[in-house]
View 1 (tube, rainbow, N blue to C red):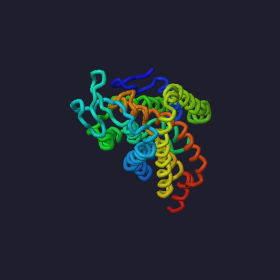
View 2: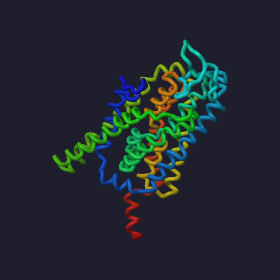
View 3: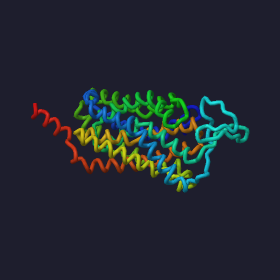
View 4: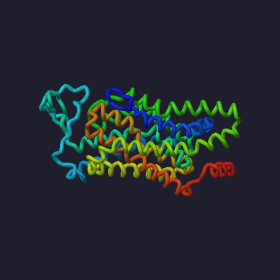
Length: 358
């Protein structure tokens, strides 16, 4: 059960329902006065943008290229090839060389035959140029971060992706001008971010007006507390059950792809966490800043891989592996953040210090 755009599955309906119930409790807690305040905090916003666009795409390319193209290429197969769709906008003849691939005829259809490891590399790159704009709201909330800052960065990431996704994709993939999947991007942002945001904002205003702020905080939010965790667990079960056949059929392939993705995620998170400490961010801003850089917008990555290379391509498989490892890995990083809160100042402490200086 999914919503398709250009023959690519963009929105899984069961996953979308789980994500809504994961994020609605977070959105309804957001005080939009705090969002405006968070948007004026230059350092956490600038640091997040720097990690997302000046660091993350290039570290993903370097790490994936090293592991898949050098360290694991013997396990993947030096002669192993993948048949992918013809490059968009190119009119090539059978036998023509395009990059590292060659045009071949398969059942009367022209395809590009490329080294299999390069196909996996393409999927990793697509993950690297797609910063998260949905699940990071959950990670930020679970790590007790500043939900206002996380929401501001979700909005900024959504806008910058519209401008930079195609530019970075075209450069790093080497396929010329990479078309941005506008419909897939806008649809996923609408379902995963805008819908729970509107529902949360509207219901918050209505409940406070009808019942009062005290009832809202002490009673309504109390009943919502277990909803996010329950929906998260169901999402994890659904993701693994949907891709169980792929995991069983390609256990070692999954491992070769998962290792560079694991290294990339931990490295980018660590960089964000260390820089947050250096720039003296509060813990409430440091945690979501690091989480946003580490996580990926896998829905857009999967849709783009399917559109550019085909649903059965190695690139599409690599983006799916990204989905499978992201939830448990990000939960591990959430636990790390919660265990290292004392490394940072907290917002209450920061406000006290500033008032003392004044």
